[in-house]
Length: 136
Image (tube, rainbow, N blue to C red):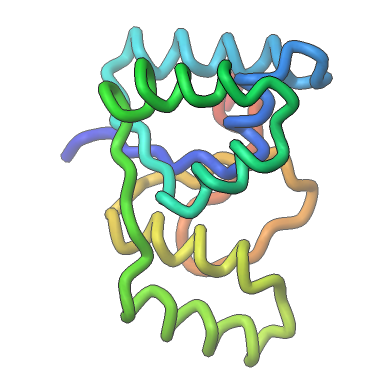
């Protein structure tokens, strides 16, 4: 089984924005993932979020074109992910965006969901931060 990892939006921002405190961690993470042939997954809705929030729009567009669309797997939620995430969010009083990302990762059979959030929902997939993944 391939090593599949799903990146949360904050991880991609860390990679793109050199001013963020976890930028070096994100670079180290990418080197590790590439060197060890991990399959990287993100959801397609993340692209518009990253573009909208980023200061350097051209940099984001080039990153999407040269990295994300050539080397990563961009996946959509689909109706079953939306249904499961909505139900989960209602039952657990949690953030829908986190639930959508997590259930999308499960749907893609990712082993790990990587985030820098201090508290992330538990939807049945291993949730790690930089330290837990790189030093675990």
